[in-house]
Length: 306
Image 1 (cartoon, rainbow, N blue to C red):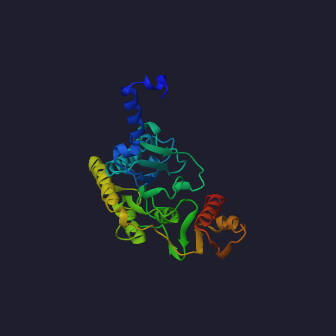
Image 2 (image 1 turned 90 degrees about the vertical axis):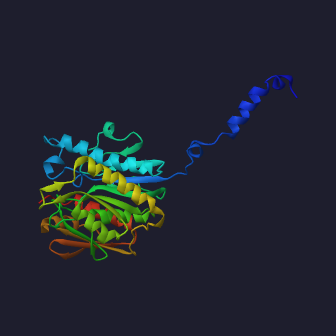
Image 3 (image 1 turned 120 degrees about the horizontal axis):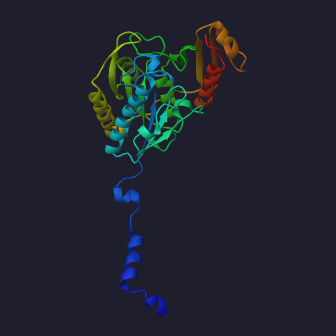
């Protein structure tokens, strides 16, 4: 043996052996990777009852941004306490630049800005164990639902997939399901919670933070209680995630996009493969749901506002 090596000494050799034997950070925590994806909209956030609160440049927008971060942080805290090793948050409202990164729980990763290929679900992939939809709202035409709409209030009257009219939560849950990820929790007003159960099934955990009186007024759950309910709901949802099933439909996927006015359908009708069902409705079929969803978004984006 080389004398230099022999001179290292017993202490150094033992230290080297300890380094080799040291567990990874995941092993130190006693956890295997457990990733949670959060898509967060704004109309269903605690405190929000009017578009002035969800639109940049208005006096009330700044406060609503804080409420949005607080609802998300409650979900992040619940996920971490339930064993999540990584939480990714996708800002999913309007410009998708609503959450101030400085207000977000530093343990979470933020996806911000637009446009994004998967829009409200950008960042989802098969590595996630579960998905939460925080601050969501009911579909267009829902009675007693805060700021009800589907994707674009000025363009879309309704959207059907395989004959079923879906709210945003359903369209986005199908994206999660495409990657094998179950949506296990939805928060918002009582109307969206009811629709979540109707679309995703009775096992989805719902957290109502307000009850709407019409479209622009609501009875709010007390603020601290609302965040506690979100955190508790997350822990409940992740406690039974092993039995959760991704939301899926059988392809091919038949999309129907119902516009508010015929001039909006005039634009989308020029896209190859579309069929004009009536003056305000276009239809098309896609073998792949993601490709169909992207076509749908394009048809909405090119339509003039009414």
